[in-house]
Image 1 (cartoon, rainbow, N blue to C red):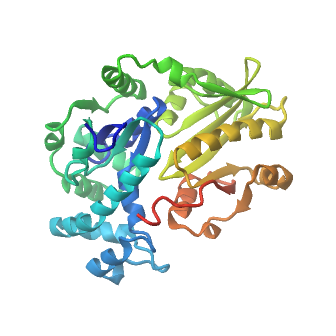
Image 2 (cartoon, rainbow, N blue to C red):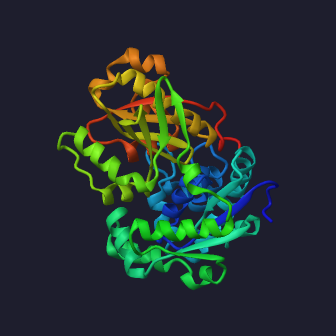
Length: 377
C-alpha cells in the first residue's frame, strides 16, 4: 500500500533518455495525476527556495549566474563527474522533493498518481509506491536522444549516461518494464496493457472521451486514435504553413494533450495544451474561421483552466500571434494579460516560457493559483 490513503501510486523510473516523461504523460492521458520529481528538484534550488542556500554553501558561489540563480549547467559539470559531489547534492535536494511530493499528492483529488523520478529507488520514494514501473531503451538510443533533443555533444551525453547505475539495477526492482525504443503506438500499447492489468474494470474509452459543453460548443480531450483527424484539421487551417501527418500528431501526444472544440459534430478548433512543473501552456491554437474566435476561445479555455486548476497549476501561459495578442478586449475579458518573459519574475515560470514560446509569438499570462505549491516546501 502507498503512503497516501486513498491513492494508488505508480512509481515511474528509468535511466536518462529512456522515456520516463513520455510514459508519465501517457498515464496522464489515462487519468492519472502526474508528478515530475526531477522538475521539483530543480525548483528546490531556485533562489528563495529552501535548497538554494545549502547548495551554494556546498559548491560555492561560482555556480551562480549574473542573476544570482544557480546555473544548473555549471553545477552539472561538477556532480556528473564526481560521485561524492552528486551524493552531497542529492542529500540536500531529495528530502525537499519528498516534502513537495507529499503535499501535491495529498492535495489532488485524483486516485491514481504517476510519480516520475530518476532516483525513485535511491531517494526512498519507491517505498511510498504501490507498483514500480521502469522504462528501458538501448544505450545507443539514449545517446541519440540526448544529442538530438537536448543538444548535448557526444562526450557530454556519454558522461550523463555512464554517471548513472546500470539499468539492470532498476529493472530488478520493476513490477512493469516499458521498452521504449519503438514508435509512440508501440509504447502506448504497453502502457495501456499495464494500466488495464492494474485496473481491469477501467474503461479507457469512456474516460478519454469525456466532454463538456460550453457556450454551445463541446470540448473534448483528444484520444491518440483521433490523430488523423487532428492532423488533417491543422494542415487545412494552416494553409500549408504547417503540414502534419498522423505520425506527427502521435509524436506530439508524447509532449502534450489536445483539446478538441466541436460545434454540433463538426470539429472547429484544436488547441495543444501541456502541463509541466505546475505550469500550463497552450502553444497550438487552430480555430475555424466560420466561428467566433472569442466565443470559441472562451469555451475551450474554460475547460483548460478547470483542468489546470485540478492539476494544481500556478499559471497558464498562452502563446498567440502578435496580432491576436493586441486584441486586448478579448483577453481582458478572459483574465489574460500580455507579458514578457522577464516580467514573470519566478524562475520556473520564465524557464517554461522560454522553452515553450514559438518563434514570433506573443505571450499571454494568467495566474490561477495564489499559493505556490513549492514556496513553503
